[in-house]
Image 1 (cartoon, rainbow, N blue to C red):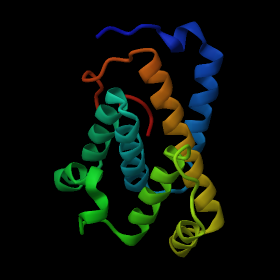
Image 2: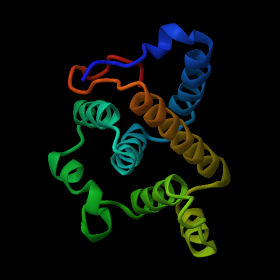
Image 3: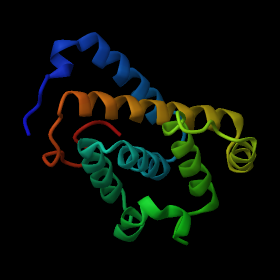
Image 4: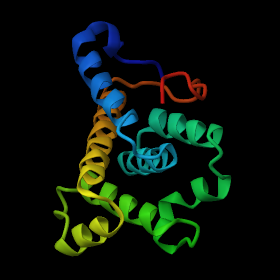
Amino acid sequence: MSRFIDYPNVAPKGFQAQAGLEQYVRTSGLELSLRELVKTRVSQLNGCAFCIDMHTKDARAEGETEQRLYLLSAWREAPCYTPRERAALAWAEALTLVAHQHPTEALQSELAQHFDEKEIVDLTWCIVAINGWNRISIGCNTPAGSYQPGQYDR
């Protein structure tokens, strides 16, 4: 597959705006390993091959295990994720699939046990950012496979 539209060059101000949100997320204080798990899971849900390729490679480069990456789509049944990671993954799924059902109070309570208010907002911005990247990458046919770890700032 070849790229349909070279969106960073066609609409550089839009790309810069999205990159600005990504830069905020990177400097928010949320741990990189958590951000990569969330970005990978959201990208799996959205079927974004480019972003799955990118975030699994970046996660591995930061020391994430193959087992945890392989089990990510079945994280609820896998014992290798921390309670904090589980809460973040549940939140990521709920917000990504918001058209099917809004997050419940029970999910919000679980999230609040592991994240303070700023972390919840920052995690939400992380989820918003990766959903945006997924949609522009899918819509413009950004080809997967050639990304190298650290190619973009993490």
